[in-house]
Picture 1: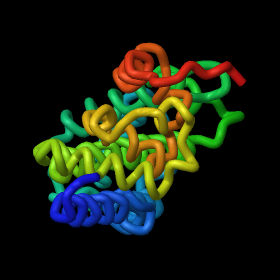
Picture 2: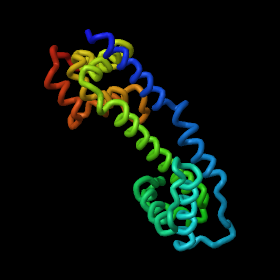
Picture 3: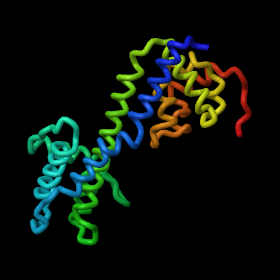
Length: 222
C-alpha cells in the first residue's frame, strides 16, 4: 500500500487526466470550432473545378480552419495551406475504392459524386483527430511523464482498484510497480475510444511484453 501523500497526489492526477481527455472537455475546444469553420467556409461554387481550382479551394479551407478554429490561430501561407491540404488527403481521405489525394480529385471531378463538401468534411475530421491526438500527448506529457515512481505506482494501484472490472486478467495479475511504466496505455483503455484492449495486448506492444514476462499464473485461453 502506498503512503497517503502519494495516493492523494495520484487521485488528483487521475481526476485531471480524465477531465482533460473527456468529450465534455475536448468537444467545445477542438471539435466544435472545427465544425463551425466547416459550416462557415465559403467558396465560389460557380467556378469550374479543375485540379488548379481544387488545390486553391482546399488550401483556402485548411488555412481558414487553422486561423479560425485551432488554438493559437496559426496563419498559413497559400503554399503552406495547399501543401497541408494535400498531405491531409494523402494520409486521411478514403472513398469506397481508394484513398489519398488522387482519390479525392477523382471524386470531385466525378459528376455522380457530391462535389467538394464530403472532401472538406473529411479534411475537417482529419484535422480534428490530429488535434485530439496532440492534446492527448500533451496531457500525458504534462501530467504523467515527470512524476515520481511512487506516484506512478499509486496511480496504477488506484486505477486497478476502481476500474479493474473493465480489464483482462493479464493486467489484473500485474502489480502496480509492473504497470507504473505503462500508465498512458492504462488510461487509453478507459478514455480513448479508438484504443481497444486487443490493440493494447498486441504482441509488439511493450505492455504486452511486460505482462508475458511477469504473469504469476497460467491462464487457459477462453
